Image (tube, rainbow, N blue to C red; front, side):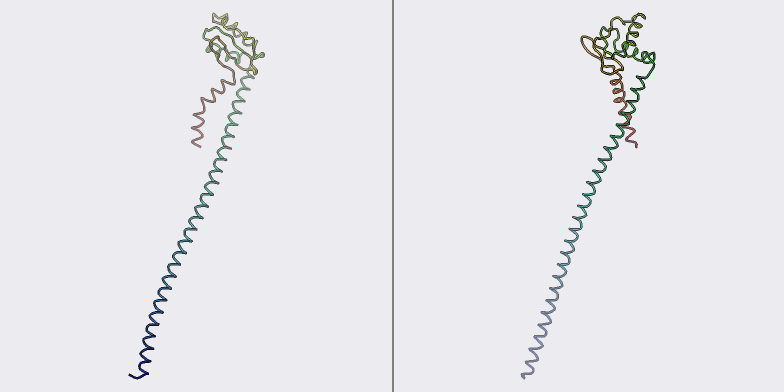
Amino acid sequence: MSLDKIKEAVLKASRTEAERINAAAARQAKEKLDIQKENLRREFEYQYEARSRLIEEEYARKLAHFQGTAGKEYLEARNASLRAIFDRARETVLAWPADEYGRVMKRFLEKITQGRQGRIRIHPDDREIFSTLLAGIAAGGGEGQAVEIDEGSLPERGGFVFITDDFEVDATIGTILQDIERSLLPEIAEDLARE
């Protein structure tokens, strides 16, 4: 073999080896690049999902806060409306003519006292009405004399407190209206649930 042929064989072998090495290096570089691309894609996807979740959580918190605030404001407005209605009802009852107010108080008085002895505590402005009521009940054969007007007085006009040695019954307008309001709460809640 001549030196040229040996040279040519060595060059051919080295070219083949260089091509194989280049191909292997290119394949490895491509695999490495694909792995890095996949890692970057996963990282970006993870960051996107994490940031999306943070944004969703932040907006969910803001929405819950807004809904809570709106609900609270709605309830406050509703309660203010109810309070205004019952305040107006109280004013209306207190503005009734003496005979109408007396008829209503007589029914409460008869229902609560039921012939028991005791005293009624009233506001000084109601003394004349209740004195007439008790005299009328006594004249009608009722137990009016068993009930007397107490020495003490209520701070606000409207209704009475029946006092015995064993118990007291609050039949003031404020308490009566509170009882009516409490009895209406289920209906009010049902109406609100439908809205």
